[in-house]
Length: 215
Image (cartoon, rainbow, N blue to C red; front, side, top):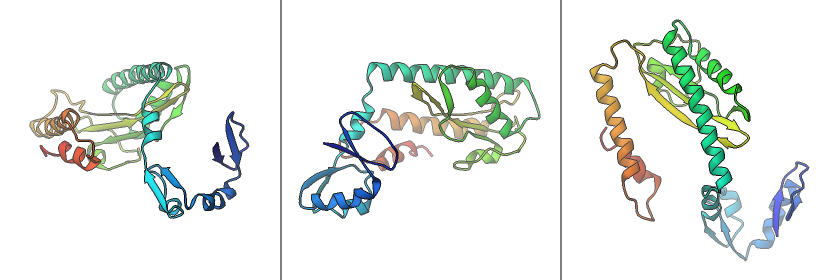
């Protein structure tokens, strides 16, 4: 029996829907049972079981896409690619705009596509030193084409979700030596992390270390 604990009024075939207040009391009946829980499970929930093992079974099923999901993902990224290409062309041809302008323009380009719902997270448009700030919020800072520009954006479509990051320069004459050197090291780290073979017990720490090896 599959049970869903929620305060929302939902009806799903093959699913027993209960109020969220019933979730904790329901755990008491499983205390002495052998249960499987996901790695996302909270310590509070884990504490209710005497015999609990972690499993990635649900995550693995989520990661395995069917043909419809794969087609939806491809279409979502195609639409986003068209929007980004249009945006970059517009940015290159204009001057005096802000980070927030870039985020707004991108949203408008995407709105032209059928199935577009909205951003999957707030667009990060960052110029110069703002580009090194983790999860920077786009501001009224004017984009300086002589400095690095970071765009981190994503979309929700009815058929797929995207997440794309791009770092580039719009300066006439291209990148300077320091930028090319630093960017190349980061690029080599990304390739290193993606091409390395990891054992079955490897953690994300190993991936992170591989990505930073050249820095």
